[in-house]
Length: 462
Image 1 (tube, rainbow, N blue to C red):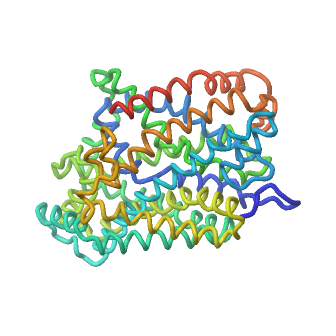
Image 2 (cartoon, rainbow, N blue to C red):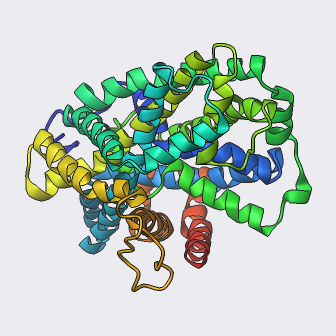
Image 3 (tube, rainbow, N blue to C red):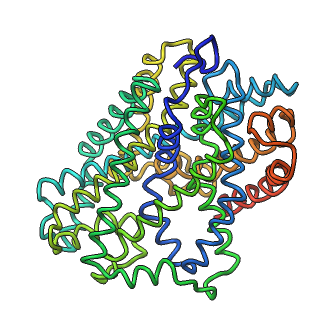
């Protein structure tokens, strides 16, 4: 992928639908499927959803619009850092703003160093489900299966390697030959699998209890902490400050509406998370499981339930395929800005940049895979207060989620709101001078920086 806007034939998405599927696929990750529904149920049901949607609209949508605008506005840059520099140059601002894009690339690279390990778990369990290894499994055996996977460095490294190979191969094929082809298959498959699982849960589970858990408003559970959780969920779920939306925005043609599509992506991301809740929690409540188990629910409790259900082996396979599709589409998006940065930084061809960055990701990602076994007692940043007990995996996760992402999003809002030329930003978004753009500008200049400062302080203090 050369500079997307250079020359007479800029590289753009084949269609609006493909762009939307790629953006939604990036935003929809494993956390949407196993964390969001639980957070909803434990924090007031539909009351929490309303608060979350408010933050998603007030924070998520304006920031997605900002990142797509930066990506599309850049005229001769492939990477997020280059896009920031280019837009800064157009606006008469300092080229050091490129460091914000570099911070986003670093954050998403650190995320990939841990995400490939988790994605590997989904592949391992899919194989177990397809081969019947989970049939009739007991609770004790299920816990032992998960523990044995965590304790097996060879198996974790194998699946980490498979995830890296798949991600690198797809991205090495470029926008049309790789990313688009992959999301055109994986995203429809993800939605089909999700609908099948909801239908299955409706038949074999306790849908009434799930509806009550997820949608019954319980305002007695709403307090200051609820608002902070909703704020953090809205920020992290959509995938802001990871350079992905900037990279995807660089392939947007001028006819595509940035505001309209931002609402669609944020809405679809929320819808998938809720559908995942209706796929999982009827089974959870129907079989008396603990809804607070998080990833343990997915990899330890649900296999037991599937083992005792009609056609359980088949739908266990469908469920873990759903997780694979969510994981791989996120990996594809996460890796794209890393490849673009490598290509631009070292003057490589796109395919060579993909394989170079992929090798670095595989090598450094071994530390995360080994954090659950042979390096479980290794705490690389123990000399820093608060990191005394954090493994490589834990350290990467904390630095990425609690420092780089909120700080990067804060600086993005400050840059686009205060330093980028106002008329050029408005023109790029396709918004007329008026109420809509004024509301966006107030949010991006004042409301969002304050909200992100809260996320940062809460994350660091927590």
